[in-house]
Length: 295
View (cartoon, one colour):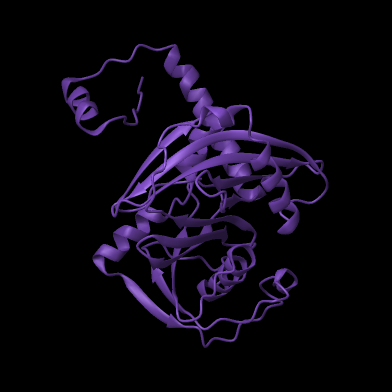
């Protein structure tokens, strides 16, 4: 799921209902992070704890990974339950995976952690979310299952001071083989799926711009295996770098959300929608909005 962060404008040119779900679900805790940061509910925790790698999936630790010296800051209002892994353990898994995929060295960095509880509307699995800001043009994020430690989503938010086309690249609708190859290579390199790849499907395109005027444009692909697993991979259309991976657990959440959206659209098509003057004015001033249809 890909979402605009604070002080950032996000425009999306979508190829499917699935892309809608992708863009609306990304990090459900981002708004909580921003809210908590604004009211100052934070707690600094140094990483001098004794982490048992056996307890947090030592088998997946990259061979070239060396424990990093970073700080952990809790950001948010919701607290983990006794069944959830500790914040420090989740942060260490984030450090390992950010190194594995992006070679991000967290030495000297601060990892902001948000706990996202189960929400039947958008999230059926509680998650820990880690966010690391490098500068105004670059930041990283990682999300994992708060109970099992299963990878959920990893992302690189990067913007460029360059002339980048905001709209859809129509040529990529049919001629995207180069990106398909990159997607296959990423799956193999980072062992994102078990079994053999059975399909690489184009999913959509997007565009983002931050407050400083930095821009980026991206393209989405879904890769599936013969084991019934799937991942979503996003690349920059500007320079072809990997920006995001939505793992199998994330895909299951997304596809569940897609079905819900499709059903709501079907129901909406069969019903008469009447806008009030207040809603019409808000639409004109702020753009598209979510409507709650009541009987």
